[in-house]
Amino acid sequence: MTSAADRASLSLPATIPLFLERWSPRAFTDASMSSDDLMAVLEAARWAPSAYNSQPWRFLCARRGTPEWENFLSWLIPFNQSWAGKASALIYVASRTVMLSPSGNLVPAPTHEFDAGAAAMLLQLQAAHLGWATHPMSGFDVKAAHKGLAAPQDFKIHVAIAIGKQGAPETLPEGLRAREIPSDRAPLATLAWEGTFEGHNEP
Image 1 (cartoon, rainbow, N blue to C red):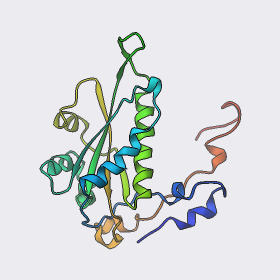
Image 2: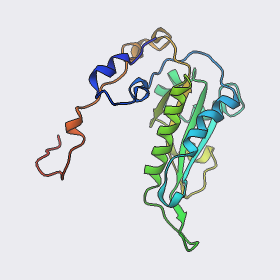
Image 3: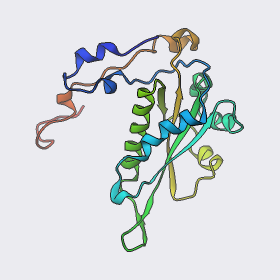
Image 4: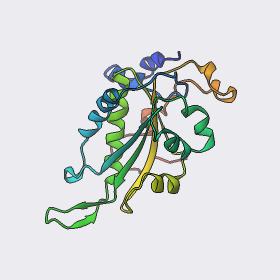
């Protein structure tokens, strides 16, 4: 199986190894995932920070072999269905676009997407810590997923995350095998700096 061990030489020494070792493979084995294993991964997401501790995120899950699996898989675009069908579970990430104000009124939640992203990242890091691989996807039918999940109107569906045990690249459709490698990142200096945008030209 492909690992991301070489990333350590491309980062600062103080970077936590788990962050570098996590990547998003598409090749999965046919390993099953117990409900207890799934809950252990989701528990980490529960502890993410959020504005006013509003906790706008929701994680809607289906494990392969359960009655909901085929529906969850069907909302993915065909390209993603071609490999995600071997995953152990699919998790759709949603967040509520409104929140209760300190006075008890429903008001817009301007950071609901940021907060849900933070929770989703904790989920993926916990999964990696426990030996599971994850691959988030934006390629799904948003309207079909929203309807199929019976999501309230004030919720937005952001991504689907496939989770499973990493498999061999040879199990993927031929056109995907060469892409089954950890991706690099832009140099830190192009992504973060002290000061303003002045003098930093975006491509």
